[in-house]
Image (cartoon, rainbow, N blue to C red; front, side):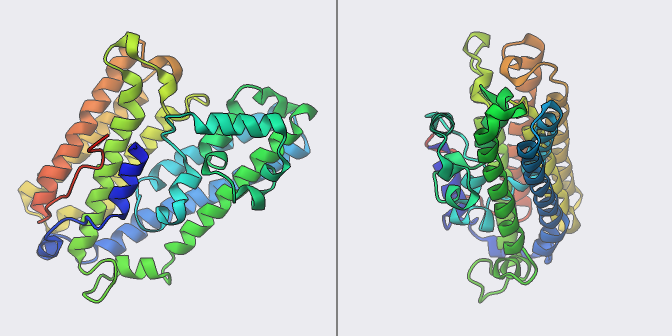
Length: 359
């Protein structure tokens, strides 16, 4: 339900009403700024690290050992950190052809990834160990959560020896497909691609964006969706109403202890997106203070998560870390309200429905 609601937000024709009225209060080149300053470098980093991950998985399979396994795991962690900023522009190419789900099938309330990945490993399904045939299978079998289980889940120690040969080949197939998806995204955002043209040069006759105000609406919507997802999907469910209700295993990537790395890089991505959009250029001092308030809350949310001192599996029950996570949630909520209520009004937008309404 949560994933469907977020995807609906990205795909539905719910760009802020009256976005054309924002023409005088948003930078006319906002699309170009976001594409050049945020999207392009984020995709370059993600594409580069997925290629390295593919290579490290291949090296692990060719010469298994503890050191090779640790290198593959470290490169996986780098990939997750590079994915964080990319996951923030959940519109356009990232939501087309279920690319987001192919890269990061989560939340997974029914445990589909665990069930299907364990099935592949138990059966040694050779069709899952080849990138071309894996690409046609369930999205739950081929994204970062699936590869996390391969590298960190039960039985992962086999990867350091001959017994992990099939597991390693399956992991390599996942990494190869991640590299391919990253390349697809990069090409879809290339300067000569149709989406890039519509996003950076909005015009009345365009199919997607007819004005800078509509582009600004897309950016604001991406920010609020990212904020709600980080807070309401990735952090709060695991926090629970009290420590007895807390469960760190409800967070993404808890096995690799990369939960807070992921959320932290998502927050860094939000800050980068705000700065790239450069809303302050066309706002007065009061409007600029609104942008500063958003960045203030994001910085404090990030700082709180960086201070979490225990693994994600246990952090949500530890008193001090629980307080830090709660504080981060409050700061993210504050940033969300400031963007959806104050910043959107300052730049002349009327926001649509909440991404998580109904869940």
